[in-house]
Image: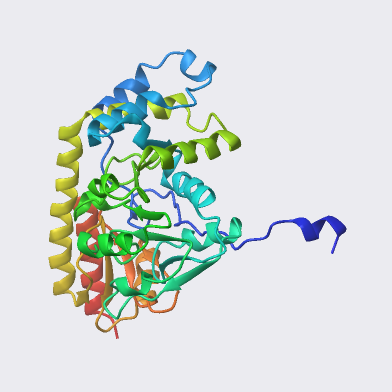
Length: 354
């Protein structure tokens, strides 16, 4: 080993979903929205002048912060904006999880959580979901350095009732509780109203799913002003100009078009319902989804076999070779055409499987 190598920070990185680029593929592996962003987003991109790229962006991201505050009926000092919810969560981990006690989160959840803990030297303990992949709220009633819960959870798509979430928050008022609500618009009620009751609650959401802007990288957190100021202080200590001017302008337009936002969500929910029925007829089962994806297992054929067969036909879903979930596929809800192609292939494959 070279002398300087001992000082390199080594972590096992997060592995993102595959990003293939093939003609006529069906891409259902990274939970992207299959429909375009609000029409105003395209217009603002076309109308941009050269100053949009020549000048530094507003470090406070005021335009987008104000639009989000208006949309959620909050004050602007209750909103933090970052470059995707991954950036927002990373800043939150760095800001709030500085205790020698372990941070708690489920054993089956978003796999970036342990990566950030390892990167920032944060101790953590995973709490096992029950046999139905549900949170056991009593497991969080013990000393800890913070709590992170994705609701609806990924990759299971399950939503935990707000009574469960509030019970966890109420038993942990001395630490920060982060609710990662990346998929909340597709099912269930947000915990956002609880930030007025609990000053230790941070709710994180994203433009990547329901607002069709995964490629623009916009995420945000909502909480009491002290939490938001602390996160901004950390952000400004790393990089003041985190979000580009293009994303700020496009993001603000996306928030303004409430009708398109709601219609888009309902369109995906309708397709999700059709897909659930079609896959059930083919022998699949899955937890009740409150997200824009299904977490499906077949009653006879191993998930890995189905995953490989789909991939050979340029139909991409997500397979996790991990304990407890290695016989499940995470299937994003795409367009109606995408889902019909998926079901048509699966029907023939299952009929001929030996």
